[in-house]
Structure formats: structure tokens, C-alpha cells
Length: 134
Image (cartoon, rainbow, N blue to C red; front, top):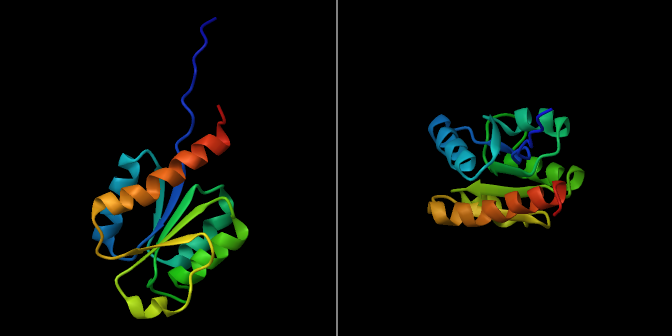
């Protein structure tokens, strides 16, 4: 009987970005870093599926259409999934007048891809180590 070793599943990442072109670019960047990405145009859509799996990372824009914004999503993620990484992005600094929940990172738009990678990679690595300790 032949035994095969399956590679561990890739870290699941929720991406919330209402701009379709940027959502596609971010999806590609995250997949290039080794993640499996589920993307949404609104924070309300992300919130609706938040409890469906253990997310390694949630990346959200602050401003998304609808009744829930990215800050509310980040707050909910932090409270219900304390092990998940959370990155909030925005080009609108006036919304950042209030502090982010503890453990939530802020990435101001526009940002260089190196800054994005430096924020994302440690979270993906930490998730993999937590799920598959050596």
C-alpha cells in the first residue's frame, strides 16, 4: 500500500475590499504568499461568514458599503477570533481618530507591497505553526 503525505492546508484569509481591481490584486498578493483567500466587497458579507472557519487573517478596508464598516468587522474579529491576525487598511485618516482594538494592525493606503508582505507573512507563519506544531 502506498502512503502519501498531504501538504498542510494553506492559511485561510478573509479579504474585504469594495474596489474590484484592488480586491483582485490583493487576492493575488495573498495567494502568492501562500494563503487561500475568500474575498468580499462589504464588511457585512465578511461578518456573515466569520464563524464558518478558523481564519488565519482578516484584511479589511475601513470604508466598505453597507451598514457595517471595516472597523466594526475588525472589532468583532478581535473579540470572537482572538488568534486571528487583523489588518485594517485605509486612505482616509480622519476615520482613524479612534484607537483600533488591541492586536489590530493599521496599513495606510497607498502602501508599498513590501509593507503589506511584512505585515502578512508573520501572521501566516504563526497560523501554520499553531495548527501544525513541529
